[in-house]
Length: 457
Image (cartoon, rainbow, N blue to C red; front, side, top):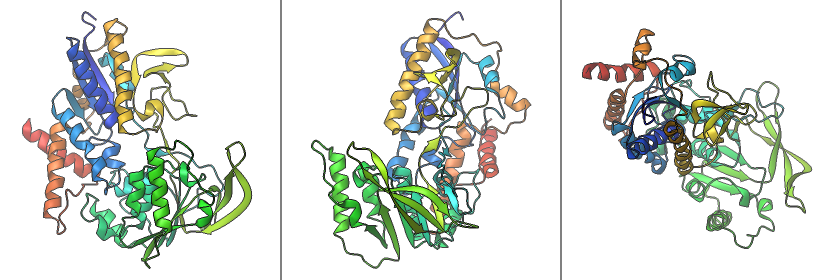
């Protein structure tokens, strides 16, 4: 290429990872005196990824991140092209033919496996699927079975608490959020009375944050139930973090709080490792082995088995990366193999192909980690561009022309602004004032978005 810093880059995935990467790339190239054209693709008609479809609707604090992401896309340095799936509508090698570099930021949207007998019985669900349902994901059925009175949630992370909190909450307490109407209807008919959350470690080894934990105790008409045996001889180690101290104080406060006779109960169980899901034709119970810490500080099974009657079970033991057709994939780790963001096939780097976010490092860390992660990947991309290591595009022309030839109903940023405004108007007109009412069907999202784009063209 005649000017290493006059480049075109495609980013696949319009969640925080992809948007941060695009924004950092635009600023980095600009500061270096170059120019960059960035196209941001997503398989969904709307941007923001898990911020729109993976965060509980009663978390406005986290949803506030959307404001920052909106500003980055609204600045005009990044072109958003939604409803375009890499591997279906456009191949990775077709992107490589038309761009100097491609960044994969497809994230992790599937549930990690829990390999125990009975986990596939009817009544057993992945937490990610349930989260996608109550967030109005267009590719999830609009109805969800909530006919179980007693429910188990396996996991001790923030997603487990989100699932447990939404299951335990009354629908009336979610009416002010952006939860879709079909979800409200499903929650209003819910038969849930008891939600049991299980972790294989103790109360001081939980993975959720103090804020997430405290929110459980603020749910109306829900009693928190803790077992004294889970807190026997529990002491903070010297030098424990303030976060851990807050978590322990929260637990201790709940232990001393009398039951109120609430219509629903949320039980937190510790030192329980799942062994099997029991049932003939559907879930009837979960078998756990009681655990304890041995002399070396390792959590091990004690041999004591307990069967907890439930009629549904949700596994919330983590996410698994989404493979991208045409890119290498590490099935053991659920990531695209890479070295600091440079994708490798075997030991050899794939020139011009990069990864960022959860598909790069696995589904761990918070939003702040995603930003620093994108900085690392983009730094290598810019370095490769500066030193002439990026392969020159074999084809010229705008990729949109190819999408139109294939009759792909792609959406744009202007289309998202129209869909966003439409959802907000639905919220304003609702009998219960709401920030927005999400449009769930994909076709309806696409029609609203494309109608606005055509009107502006």
